[in-house]
Length: 394
Ligand SMILES: Nc1ncnc2c1ncn2[C@@H]1O[C@H](COP(=O)(O)OP(=O)(O)OP(=O)(O)O)[C@@H](O)[C@H]1O
Ligand SMILES: [Mg+2]
Image 1 (cartoon, rainbow, N blue to C red):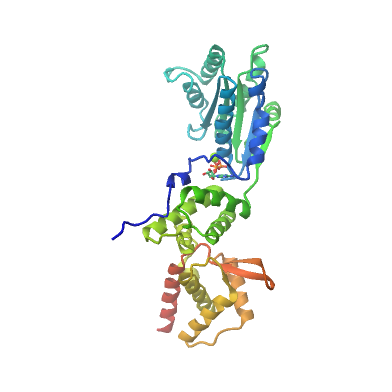
Image 2: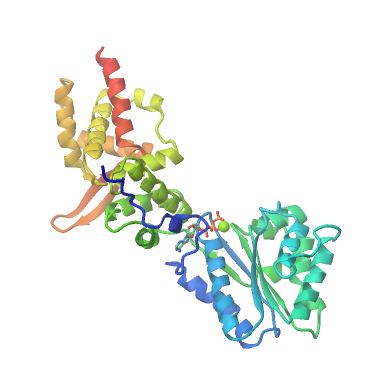
């Protein structure tokens, strides 16, 4: 027997810590960061900068900062500037200022003793080291809300006013604060707040088409050719939008769906793999919900489940589902309900979050509604519905 073929070409490209060379739909923000820090290339030491990057979960804040950090590092190196980009996740250090400073200092002085110094002493030492080495740094405080929550505004004040105490000397440290929202800042005193709020880069939630671009690029890096169809990418992007435009969620789904494809040795990622992946992350279906449905609601949903189980299409038209529903009705000795009534079922199931509907433009008749079963395994759904319908028959 031939060894099982994986759909993956390079799974590491889907790792949450992987930073792609290009970040689609964050080009503008990347350019803006480059402009803010352009002085590092032209006249390092003449000034320093503070920037806030904000946006909801999975909008690319960390990825953008890391990408920018790597890019500015290579640009400064070309100019012969002694520069380091240091990215610290404050939550990893439980928001403790002295642990964060320890980490920052360790990038220059790995052997510096870990004990016996306060955060202020470490900060002072860091500044001395920068002077000694004629070096510059951008310190990115990722999840900075953790730091502010724990240490309060005083710490931020110390950090942001650092350069002002060093009048006449080269300015060596710039700061990037990353936070999901600006609530933590509102609590700060007026002067720290104003120094921080000067440059805010806000990352908006991703729209479906943007997630499609992001996913498509990852697919080409991580998957073997022709193993992930466009419809599958579209389905995942839709689910990403439902989860607030969260790219991390979408990429994780893509990876898990690939895992389900490999587990069954399918050779390609099917919509059913996506549904299994999403139900493994968020269980959407409760059996009690199904049991309480009316008879024809169950029969209709069973028709939809069978359609998606038997088809590799991610989307169906109402008439396609209607045809299978008619067969199901025959099986159960029931008279099928009208098209208009079925339409109401579709609306109902889409309100429940079981089916999803979307109006699309067609080449022939203008507009059509397409139905998908985004987040429940068609196989599981059929099994559950058949079980409750059987019970009723007995
Ligand atoms: N524009 C993009 N292009 C390619 N990949 C992206 C893009 N935006 C985000 N990603 C990927 O999505 C995932 C989540 O992004 P990231 O970790 O940067 O989000 P975040 O805004 O920092 O979220 P959190 O608030 O949870 O920390 C990462 O794997 C990242 O590489
Ligand atoms: Mg992050």
